[in-house]
Image (cartoon, rainbow, N blue to C red; front, top):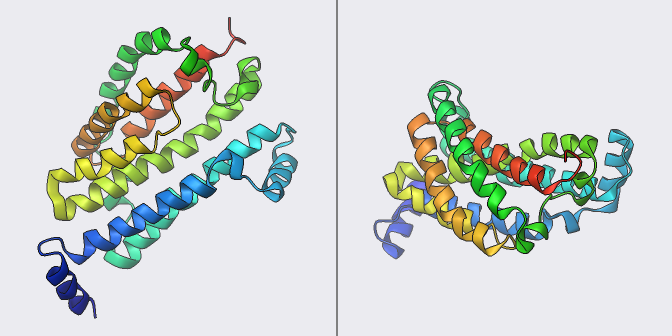
Length: 243
């Protein structure tokens, strides 16, 4: 059956192959679902109530963010992992969930983060950034909420890095070789829609850097760390509780 499908696809789109078609379609639909149903504004009341009872914090906005993080885990990580395993027999390690090879890149990541701190400081007080950061407005004046939010934020970055570097980079590399960097980076940039213009434009450069690091280490973990450190630093500079 698969062979027949592959031949049919090759007649319609010579040279493309069946695997990039179905993986690309699945990735696109998952991003659409995440965009429309994984935002904080899409958090259902039942989830907010149960999350409040579990965490013991009443702040609705916090649990709306938890919904967004949980949606990222389901749609951007678990669903692609299941598809990759069922469709191709790929394990999580095949798609970047490996520690071996990642440790040398951690020093590079820490160096990049250190280099970006002055840049983050320079832009953090611009009106466009003040309107977005900190992502949880109440964390601006509360160290406890800040730490709780940033800890949960790490879960989202694991899902994001897996989707764009583990899934859309490593999976498509099997057919597109290093051109999979563009397959990963272009939608990654567009998924920053709604962020400040400068941040959205720089996401293209960040995507290329993160792909380079992932290809060197064959791991998503250095990218997870860098993404989380930079995002948390932006939230930190935009907060006043530490001043």
